[in-house]
Length: 86
Image (cartoon, rainbow, N blue to C red; front, side):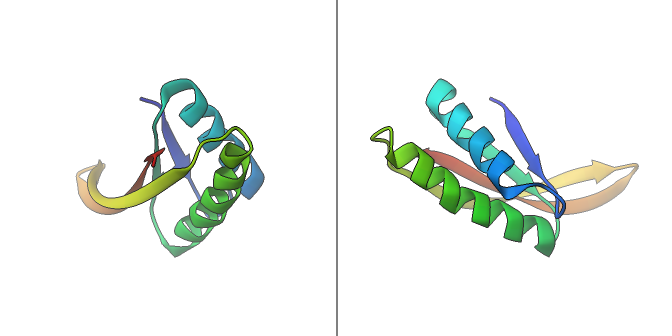
């Protein structure tokens, strides 16, 4: 599965298009974020992606999970959104 990594500088429309495209192709998407700014961008993109997918007759939901990542020996907790059809 393709993992979409979102930063606070990510363009909302681009992330939304990626989410919608991956859900259309693979049936499910995963979005990973670290920090409040990236969470904000990802959530706005999720709202747009739901609209894009509704045009195709798809209704999606998302649910969060915590993910522990290792950055050069330092443990960082990230948030991951799982996006799948309702």
